[in-house]
Amino acid sequence: MTTQAPARKRPATVTAAVVIVYVAAFLGVGLGILVMLSRYQVESAEVLWVSLLGAAIILLGLLTLGLASGLARGSRLARIGITLSFGVLIVLHVLSIITTDGWDWSSMIQLALQVAALLLVWTPPGSRHFARIDAA
Image (cartoon, rainbow, N blue to C red; front, side):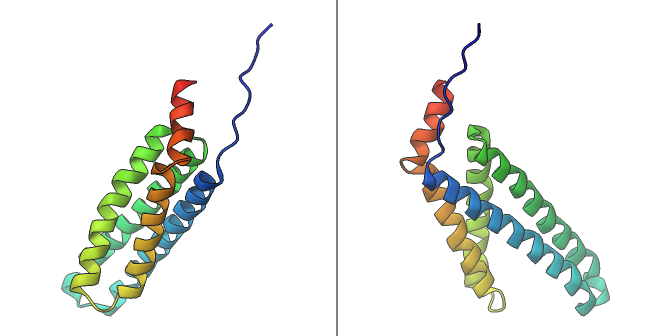
């Protein structure tokens, strides 16, 4: 006879972080699509670079979707992946806000979402939730 460990309920803070990561991922994919479409408004010498940038943004958004799914299942690896990717994106958003004028509103929204998600998964009770999964 096998016994299963009782299911642990995910804290509301982790659920909120998962929702925020999903929203940030969909916003990233949407931004990548807009960047891809903007290649029709640039000079012909810049079309390749704008297309590659848009494709990279879309792929990062899709990676973030996968990490959000892992985060929802309680994966510590997904939490580390979100931390690394959002850490890089936070730096890039701050640089974008400092150096450009056109994307300030988008960068500020994504910056706020990413900081909020990181705070939710690394502060208690989120950090305790991931520690319990590791101990089990």
